Image (cartoon, rainbow, N blue to C red; front, side, top):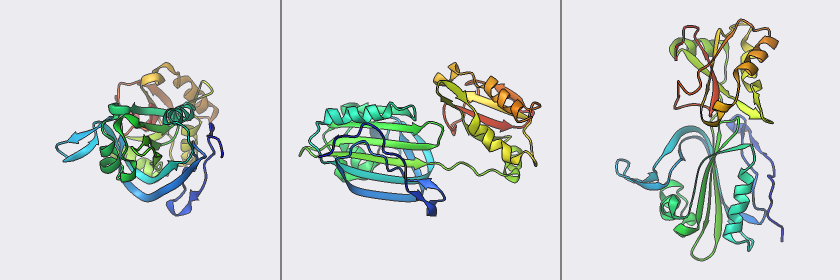
Length: 282
């Protein structure tokens, strides 16, 4: 019998028909069997950020708080086939999510999650996940530096069977060209260049620079605006971005850091950069 994996097993299977969507094949438990899988190329999705409860307007049980997303969806139900106790299985998931690759957006356990029946039947539409309310755990997670979101649900049924469920929602980045940039600047006054991340304790602006560089021959930014909130308020991104711009011979580009003064409901993450019109005011 194989032991529980503590590390991740890697990513795989690039779905060509989904234009590069990477289906996650990483697992936390090796002693499992796949019960059910599903994929959907374009899905309107609610990422759970609260316990499940009755929404009288919607007329059904949904998370009390959620984030609306749209993108490429996949889901997998696994049955845990080893005799590892549920509490130990929960610790393995928690250890897995301690990786800096992940940002936990919401988590709950036991009755704090609401009732398992509603998660299984109303939210996930996976009746096999209906377990006892006291034996359930849920995590909503985001990949650092990527608009890939996961919902993990671990549950034990009254008959003792344990199931682990994962939903993945990947929001593709907008493919930029000079025409799209001009159109967004004219229509909205800004265009999101993506998330800023911290790597090895240092601000990393490389992904943002890579989105700017291909278009410099046709259009150059005049003003870049840094947004950040939460723990990212403790990180200095402005100097790092200015240094990267200087290295790319873009010294004339102005950089403003507005912290959390201009929140956006569609933000890429806790820190991001917008290319904005030169007359932009937060």
